[in-house]
Image 1 (tube, one colour):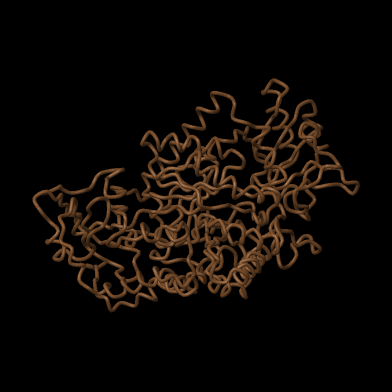
Image 2 (cartoon, rainbow, N blue to C red; image 1 turned 60 degrees about the horizontal axis):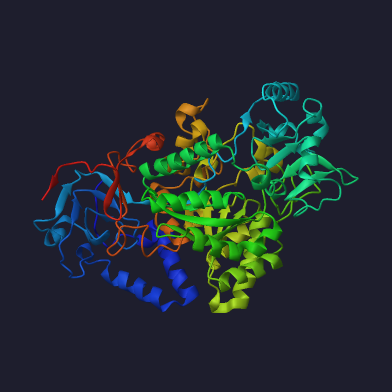
Length: 617
């Protein structure tokens, strides 16, 4: 691969997202500051190396590299100069000579690939190991109940039993769900919370419902989505969905055991280290289900000790309608009590719907196995509109979980309505996360409304249980989780890990290159597959390497309102970058997930690995 600095390249085609978004954002918001910055970049884009005439001495020059900048105006470079944690030059090697002095460290990277520091736009490093379940598996009910009984007998006491993972397809077809009486047959003398393999469902025995104080008179936070499933007489059946269950977690399952607390802290540190070693310099924590003070207090402590290796944006989660009323005050409290230079709070997380597997995604057309049912959303269009206006007045952003096409439609309707009321005064950047199904008619609306689209690429694969196909049918399954048309429309698409489970899978699913590979191939790695080719449809949904890198860099920076500071390798921005021995553009696409950075720089300092090559002066 040759490095080209020719400014005649088709930048709008190669970088449709960044280029179109920057123009659209300026027009929509009529921000003269943004317009000035945009035209300044355009004016400078074809000057050799972006040399603005400031020939100050650099502290570090990296040259002889293949630098993918994530900058639409200068996609490739071979040299960067860094001073005071920022890029002061990006361009060819000749233009960098004027920035070199006797005190400059000079490193020839020998043709290695360099990309900007990565942004994980939807992560859960604080929630890893919050929940400690006994894990069992079975393929039929008899095996499952026998395993539950064995676990209970091996766990003496009278307190809560918490288990994972009952197979969703064993019970959920036609929205029937599991029954408390079934669990009572093996464990009746102590409360049991049994989470499904998809986590968004809980199966409770009668003792658990009694312990929670839930009966036929207990209101559901939002019937149909954050709720206890009920019999005809209103009595809970034992199946609880989404926020109907999560609302009890922090109160009934506190981390008050010293051993659990130490394990949780150890795993949070390990997760942050894994992300940092992978080149992630900035992340958005998408929430901690009531354990926010525990998590953010710990992160604040790490920052105070100089041990927080990433910029970390926390959030407040809204998973029941009632929680939206405390969102603004809680974010402000987090800022006061935990905020710092790296730990910040600017975003609220909302669950608009749930997941297909437990029939809580909100759909425009009914579920295949229940023709009368389309699901429900946590907030109505009007409720979300008013919430958006409140957030806009407080200058806060929102990150919205929406998997079903009805949920996506309602979010867009609410954004459109809020913008119409606020006119040019609408502040909030709206990110929709997951976007499993999008009605084709809504694709251009996402672009027109300036909504950000967040995806987790490792979801772009086939699944062993086929639960999505079972609930949606072949036609809808064939167009799920497809960011390609959004990239093509110039929508700001961000990519992320969304991993919180921990254990053996943590190192794989937190790995951004695992996400990049699956975003590029729509397949699991070859060594995981029983067949040679299992590409998840649509077959034309595979992203280019440029697109997956943009999704993890500049686009993520925009989501977090940091596009003027990070996300691309440009003069004036913070000097975050990742150096590789392997070139992501050239290696076998099935080996991307095994790539490890040689060095990670954050604000010009090597924080992981070491710069390859001899450091000269």
